[in-house]
Image (cartoon, rainbow, N blue to C red):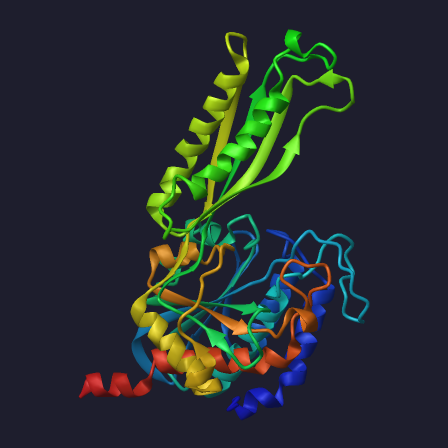
Length: 401
């Protein structure tokens, strides 16, 4: 695979960066030492740096050897997860209950490697903004950076992201226009009844029975209320109610998540959940008091790639691993990614890089996961070729003629 030779030369240095980040994980909006490390590295490369965007976000700006009117953004996420690591290697987490279980340490190291090479060569026309983003996991750091004005202070024509993918072999990339990852929303249904003695249920109004009907009913949203060729997921992930054997509780709380690709399907979720909860309460409560409250929160939109930027990204990947190793037709993931907020504002593309099989590094969000250091130069080389392709000096020269 034609990894850029200079990047191959500092593979060991990127590995050292990655191990340092892995051993010192920081969760959402707490990435103070991580952002300091990133800013120090960028500054040492001769790249201008702004810190403190959305609290802990970092942006590095680099201009090419030829002036150009265009600018692009390359983004890596920096945050870890609240997971207790169960690995025994030397670079395992030193912070109990926090772990880089999604590979953001590798994402950061790959973009730093690309920034180092691009700062040495500047073989492009225009401007690159390296966005190191906090709080991708659940807390919407991309949205926070946008709300803090990152795209106004650093205007770009396109934005690009990348994520490691353990289901994809090393030496492969995967990308397609349109949906790559799903919208991610959360909900909480609180069912309130009348508590009582478990031996005398006729004198109570049992919220547990209603909650059971809600759990079953919610599965019909995907199976019976959504077009068979559309995709939707409704998962109950928490049930809280009662604390002993012989008492019917007053309240049961259900929490869960919905996933979808289509904006129309996404809009359908909240009213469907409300209808099912209302029906269950009416059927169980009869003329007695049984009610519910629904809290529905939209978290991340679907990650939707633009056509032109997808082609640019695919061509850059093919330049590294060959066209046959760039998967162009794939099943999008029902996982979510807050890079979607950037794609709502600017055209761009999000690509998966193969991290090897689950057996070699563990699945994402597993306490046994570890990023595969072998792909660090692949990812960094991809970033470089992408920047050089999107900001090609030849296209600027041609426009000047």
